[in-house]
Length: 225
View 1 (cartoon, rainbow, N blue to C red):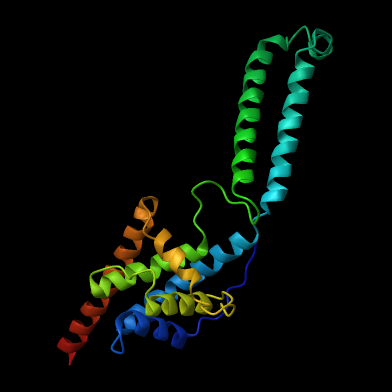
View 2 (cartoon, rainbow, N blue to C red):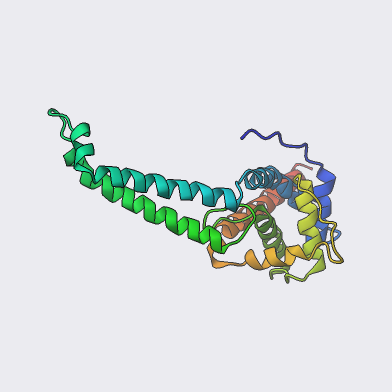
């Protein structure tokens, strides 16, 4: 899917940086947030393109039916006689093929059942992380970089920062309900899940490198002066 990235407004990312680090937020933080913007934007569009759970369940239902039809046909000696050829006996491959089809049927049934348990909405593979949760991870790690601790899920500033970053990266704003930003509480809780250890570490690495590079530039400029 080809997506045209919107032009990033640096002022938007500066506002996010201020919500995270205060009025004296360093410019390098806003610049780093802007660099993450296109990735978040693309993740959002990939999520939008995901089929519904209903449609995916139907797809797996068809896969299961097709696999069973093929297996039933291969169980017929008459069918095998038509498929067989003197120079290339089909019987040598049938056992392996039927095992593969049985495996495919089982996996498709598991996937369909899992999608049924998750209800409606868009389908996502097990372990998939929503772009909203990744947005919360970015804010959480940046917050921890400056404050030494992760933000509380109910932190209004953290929620505002996530919302502003989401909009700066092209996402639609939250306006409904008495607490329009309350949805971020859920994503801040997910952001601390053990299976997100790797991306959290990667975001921390980028933050540390950006800060170090900024300090090196400032020292070089001071020496040159």
